[in-house]
Image (cartoon, rainbow, N blue to C red; front, side, top):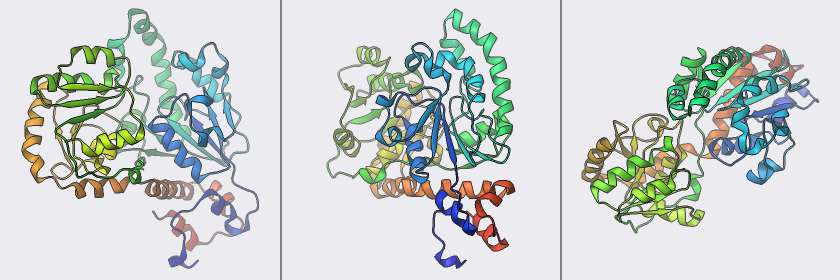
Length: 410
């Protein structure tokens, strides 16, 4: 093979045709549930673009809540989908999901890609299949965030967690052995995978639609907060801090805490439940800076703000450590408290005159869809080389050392 002419990305159809193999690669994609379009579902869309013939398996499926890209595929569900009110109460059926996953028939699939944030990786793949898990997070409620979930639960829920979660945790740990290779979406998640499962992983950052965002020459005095108004996003920190600062803040998003936050906000803080994409792009491009208060596994919102040429002030834990460069594209605040955020805003104000929008735009450009596609396929090739039964099937009947080496290289 002429190395200089090797394509930058190797798709499933390319792998299937190496060595004259006529049988197409059969691919099963396991996603925990498909009831909304969030970050995990956007990653799924990118992977579906790599594998046009892949089949999707999931616990619960709401076609009206997902994109056309997903709707056009063949989607098979576990028995959880047929349980009462499953589309709304799917999380209540968590104890049944191990049984549901192990009941899926994946006979004949050569490659299994599971998306883990809810139960997905516990499927029973064929012994000769390659199983790669793209882990957006080990299940928070079973592992490091278990105490937080207990605190927010009622007495009955806490009692049920005490009974059900220990065996679920054992099952979740044990099923990590069914995975040939883990892909983490950030260094933060790579460390959590290591802590929960004792497994190493390859980092492949999710993509953001960075090409859709543009900088503006008109910058307002208003800060911006964007996200679901749920407890872990910590929108309450932004409201409390800006109540004290008196600086203008635009809170964009909806959720269970929206009404409470709005009631506690002073007149310098305004709220928007929903913005059109055009209005959201304008909000990003014209804000003084983005305030990001959550500890996220990765976090697409800061990347979108940077793609718009604006800096980010973020809580300095989680996936933002992979995206924001302090002193160039934003700043961090140390503690997830209003006091820490107030102090950080003062420092941020002093730093802003030195901020260069092009630094933020250049940083965001590292998270394009094309880069994700390349890195994801590179990771699959490395895991395939470490799984000789699958590699033989992908490359049969001819596989030479030079080709093996090229497939293994990132």
